[in-house]
Image (cartoon, rainbow, N blue to C red; front, side):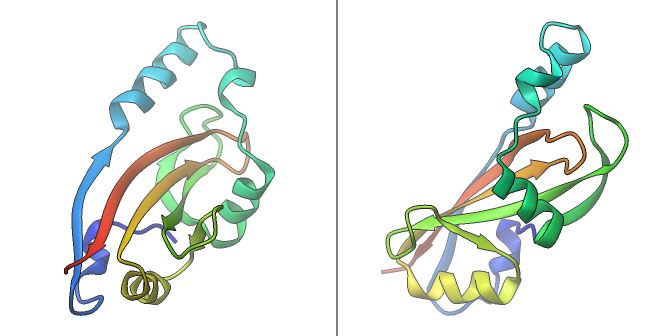
Length: 134
C-alpha cells in the first residue's frame, strides 16, 4: 500500500500533514547515469530482501514500468517511523492502519519507496511528515 499525504484527510481530529519531499530529480539522475553506462545494475539494483518481500506481498502496483529492467511495473511500499513505533518502523498496508498510527503518535514520518520485484531496483520516491496538533 502506498500512501500519499492526502490519504490522511479525515484520519482523525488533530492530524496534520506537514509537507512532502519528492525525490524524482535524484531518481531521474540515477536512471540517466545507468542508461549512459556510468552505473551498473549491481550498483543500483540492491533492494533488501525484506523490502522485496514487502513489495511482492503488500506493495501497491503502479502503471509505471521499471526504469532499469523495463519488464514489470514498479510497486510502492510505505514505511512509517515515529516516537512510539519500533526502531525499524512499520510497513503500512492500509489507510486504516495509517489513520490508527496517526492517532497514536505525536510525530511521524512516512517514506514511500519504489521497488521492482524483478530486478531489485529501489529508490525513495517521497517522504512526508505527519504530526498531531497540540
